[in-house]
Image 1: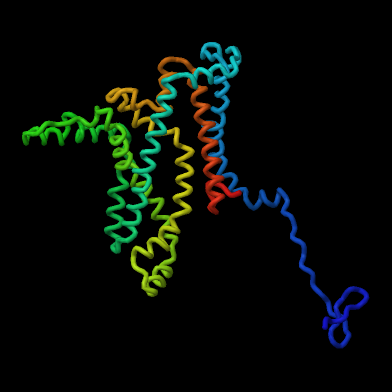
Image 2: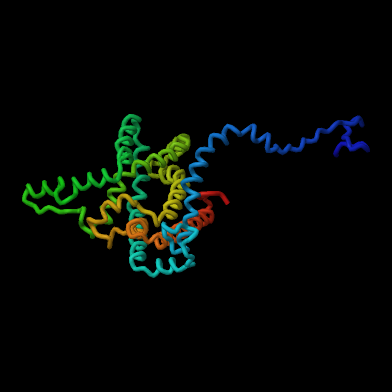
Length: 330
């Protein structure tokens, strides 16, 4: 039976004496001045990054107006004639551009299958190494090529796999015919994937090792005490811990599917021919910078950016359907 209340709304105890009730105070909204005093140090620290982002990322977006003009650098944006969507019609009816898109998607799909899982496998192997010194040594050796420029990477592969490279010379000295992998269009897709694996697999290892470090060791100990072997612990504990990171990187890679290594491909374009090495980025470069068709190149670049945005949004929505956070929350 509830305690009686007085006419003033106070609760009364069993003897009839009024009992004071304490209501929870309503949370006060912080004013803008209060929040500024609290966070001004953080805001001031981010101002240089915001300025750099505005100058080098958002301000250049205004140049996309050239995609709707017959742009001439001598006339400028304000005096160049407006042509509407004519440049986009030229882009999507150009066989060279369609071939560049096909090459880009082919390279992305091939590397998504044969390159993307390699850092995950290496991270799992390194995570199982007991000795910290051995783990750090292997990780350092694998991560070192990430700091090499693409000029150096292509040069190293040329010295090893080229027609006058180490392997070809060794084969000729032993009575066999040499080979030149660097100028063979049929194996170009495999070549650039090998280069990407050698250069950037170490960077992916760091990301996945960071995700594995969040796994509670008590989970592995409990599973081992219940009789779970190494493979079952990997399947039920380790891989679920990597799933959010894998989905996030897949979304970013899908949104970046029309962007593959510009420096890597332009360095080897003349060796294997534009038929197999021309991608969207190199196509835009040659059309705009080399041939001077700025409007055509701007239209191609803008179309590529819009398609990439749609792919990111669609992949992120698909991640939400499967219960993952994706790039941003709903």
